Image: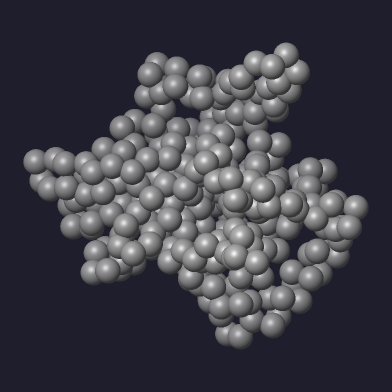
Length: 283
């Protein structure tokens, strides 16, 4: 019985899930969510990939992630959805509130007397600011690369070889060659320091990080929640301390067995359940 007890977490921050794409590790995320009992969740952008969304590819596990989060909302878990670039269509709904759920573009919260500035981070992306079509083209190429990478790793596994990440190698070379992120971390830190925030928390660049950044104007703790495409990470806050959660290091979550797809409802039935749950939420 004790082994089935869920781990209590004060605050969980998740970003860059990219539901609706081949690269999304929805089953792993679902296992993680089932292993914890969070008081508050902040979904920091690119949860549903609306750039590449297609009715032809929406696995049940993707819908189950949405349904699990909806279930947490109905039980009173505070859930904030901060918009990113891949789900930017939701930005017009900023300010929407229903029960313990709300949508916003950015958030400032207080944690044990310290201020945390939380936002997705695409505002610092040069390609997003000046050439959105290039960014979208890049996203399609990235998703294709993830698909190819899955096939390559399947072959490597057959021959007993270690997995590789083609996307990480490509992204690293892109960053060095054309400075795709354009000093993302430093820019976030500089603005956070000028506004006297204690923490600045982002997603977007798929690079989990937690470090103190010191400039001649002050210091701030920079955090990034990573993603659920390559790194399978999240940020957790407990007892006044931050940590980076890494799924690959969590044997308990990895051991959680999900229901067989044969016993699962189809997506239409899951969606009806989801709507019914929302209707029970008190405003």
